[in-house]
Length: 226
Image (cartoon, rainbow, N blue to C red; front, top):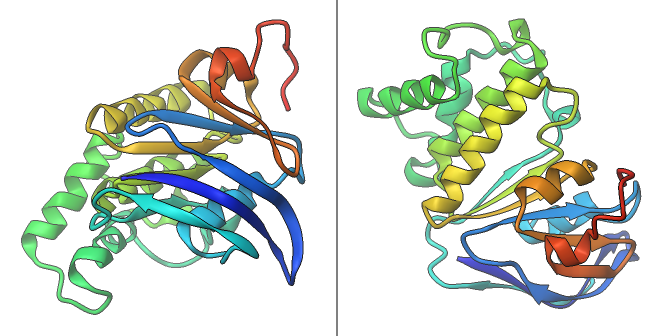
């Protein structure tokens, strides 16, 4: 499944933040969304996932969307004080397939544990999320995305304030997702990362400033982060 924008305007309480967006996200590829603070990057992701209905235009889902869209908000929106274990956090990823109140059987627990092992948290399934470092919590949130099994994956600043080793491990997961045919759209302030690892980029500044191959959107002469 891929996403296409047709004259989409997004905002809050009737006030636009993003104006008249048109374009199609490359399927089975990484697209980095960049722009200064207030340019509408997080607003765009909320519009794509359906949390924010467009003020005008429409977001079109192309292809089979039965697997849906998975969305990872910024760490600041994640309540690490909630008394929940790593395994239970990841088990929430099954809701699309089994419903919010279905019984969780042995196979689903095994799948959650496998996802935790895949992000480097094997053997820590019973730890409370509040006892984890920022990087460990982000690994656990990626494990939940694995269990959700979305066809499109949206991530809002997933590498903010985490160490280089964790970033490298999670980037490897992103590349694996696109190899499996998933479309990944990621908000980042890090121009160097987007230039190095993302084949496509979308640059926002209240509207579409540039959208396409990263080498065209982010020419080498630009060195400052946005």
